[in-house]
Image (cartoon, rainbow, N blue to C red; front, side, top):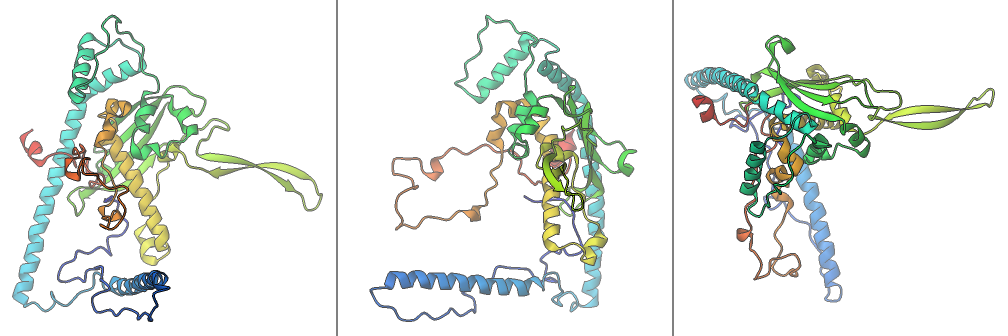
Length: 423
């Protein structure tokens, strides 16, 4: 998953002639293989396995050494730019000046797309309010709405059977609508525990608002609002999560994540779902008396979403106060937090009914890397391979897919540039 979550820009460089790229160096290029002693027929199979193990271990060690040496060269000058004549260097600087103008236009383009999103959110607001009223049972669905919905179902599934007409619609509402929709999202389903589900049954609506020019120091962004009915877990009626972008777009041409701000949840006594409580027995060393102490420990919960991770400061990164492993862990948390916010904004809120029914799962992108798969050798057994009568890979229907994950996170990331021009 690509990310627009900045950790440190000082060590990021493009593989130009001026820089030394980090490449996978194959063992076959200039590296000798270890010798293997002669073997007899009796232990040939065992020796072959041993040889392969030795080769594999050797290649891994050598590859690690090569990568380690190359890693130290990444971003360092090869001397190419420095060797150019002064006239050419001036042209290089001129191109940078042209790039500055391109960057300014890209900033204006993304800002206009953001304004276009705001415009259409205003147009969609009455539809979102109507959806909320049907979900909560505040209104009765109309015959026209039901008919349009059935046509939508038939278009998606030719074998769909229309509902009987002898039952009139009523203001019955849809129980656990948002809980079901969230659980049908691949990423969110992993965050929702059984304990969380009991609280999320009280979720009435998820809404979105864009930040105005006076909010977040004038930086662009959006706010997610989770509206709850009165419940036994917390006092809040609304839990908010605000995502703030940097003022200028990033290197990819999209808005870059700056920070996130969450609501402080006012948990009722003994109802904090982000903590687990443990009862421990303690003994006084002087009096030998014992007592029971309850200690709280952080635990996994969907509601940790409202306590977003904090990006480390540039000073902490440059000073080396944060270990590489800790930095990677923070970056992964930031990426996940940012991606969930974008998916709620771009997918779940506008297409909540498709997530409730599970239809949206057909469009979820499969994240398996092609490198994780390998072709089976011809001499392997037939298990798991296609039979002559079965569908070949080319005959398998192409799965419908939506926009790729990690698309850069711009508010207008899914907006076609031509659409922006023609609005």
